[in-house]
Structures are given as C-alpha cells and as structure tokens.
Length: 68
Image (cartoon, rainbow, N blue to C red; front, side):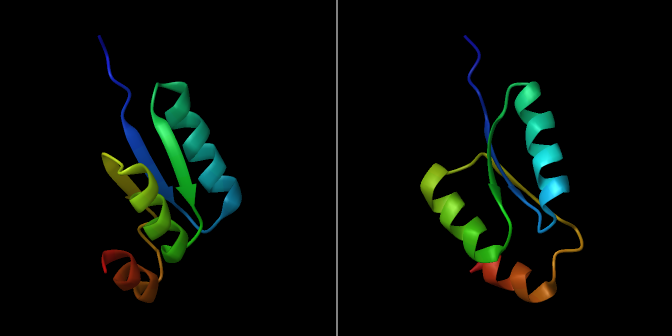
C-alpha cells in the first residue's frame, strides 16, 4: 500500500504557489501552502510535513524566522 507524502510549499507569489501545489497534488502529494514564514511555521506545526519546498529567493529575514 502506498502512503501519500505531505509537503508544505512556501511561496509569496500566489499564482506560482497555486501552480506548484496543483502540480504536486496531481502526482499524489498532500500539499499545504504558505505565503510567508509565519504561515509556514503554523502549517508545519499543523501537518508535520515530510518536506518543505521554499522559494529560493525567499527574503532572508523570513528564512531566519522559518528556521526558528
């Protein structure tokens, strides 16, 4: 039996965030999205994801907050 993996996608641009989420859901992932570090921290606490996909150009301050 296959188990679905859970991901959190962190992207501040809503169109890109939605596109990434839909693409991952289409191949079987459970996806929770976040637009900023605060939302990402809440999402990670709520769903205990297997991995987070974070915008590589995420502002440094937000990245520091996300790690805390």
